[in-house]
Image (tube, rainbow, N blue to C red):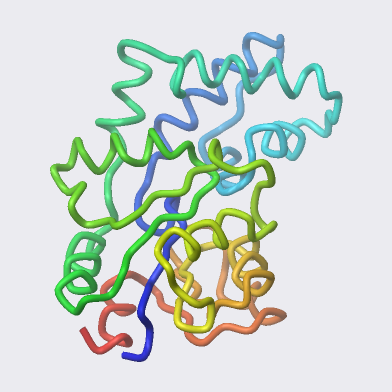
Length: 224
């Protein structure tokens, strides 16, 4: 394998937080007097910022209501939540089959691993700590650590800088066209992972070095 680093998105790439995210959306919508969305509707928002997800489902782009939804989400299941809601986010998030094995194989091969996600970095770190696998990652760059969300490559470039890697030696893996656009803007190779709601043909307009149906098949393609 020619890559010195393999970086990942988190939601629907390495892990699944759908139950907690759905709960946050439902409570946030109720607080605004809106009908709660279904889990399938919420799935289409995962990978977006909370503000963009709210607008996608409601058609409402009012900044005040976007921020009100964001605040409610953070206080019910997000970084400002306590009790069952936060437990659902941390303890109820599962890693996809093959995730731990892939990350361990990369580490064993001397390849640097990082997560670059819209999800807050502290949440991702707590999820891996709860799984007892914080050792699998060299770095996490969350959406709370950058001023511009994906597809702006700020987070990706920050990870490259912190790990001292050149973009052309890094593979970025994600489940959405937002991730593909991020990799393209950051000049990294991109691999699509079909764990989420985005079909393979949606990536046709982006340069992809590989499209993997799951993480185990990605590991095979990498020769690990």
